[in-house]
Image (cartoon, rainbow, N blue to C red; front, top):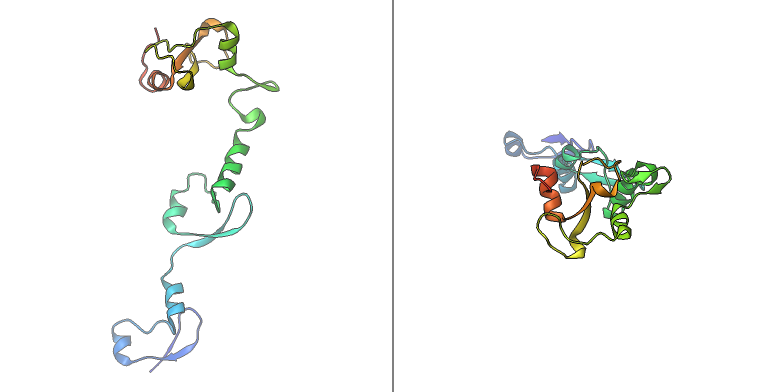
Length: 157
């Protein structure tokens, strides 16, 4: 029997028993693979390179943008937080709270747990208002305590 390929439209021979089973839709393995593939080509948001994405990846994209590799994703992400769009940007310069505390001579120790490892200490605003940069409003917290203060309303004093 003759059948027409659903991908390329070419006529090909197929056994009647295969047609009864629902087979005989594609003329070759290549056409069968194309017919089985789900997804679509998307453009990389940075370099505009064409990339294949499966439905799961398309559905799970929060931004609706797609990237060909991690470096393109990093370039896009850095554009979002550069210059005046960065949360620490204040009128033409970055405000570095850590350096403000260091210049003041504040002792580098976590206000809650007392850890003194400088690698994990961050500057924290007591009133949680980033625009209030009074030195009395800034304290040292370790990353763990800082997370607990912001996410579980743990007291700093």
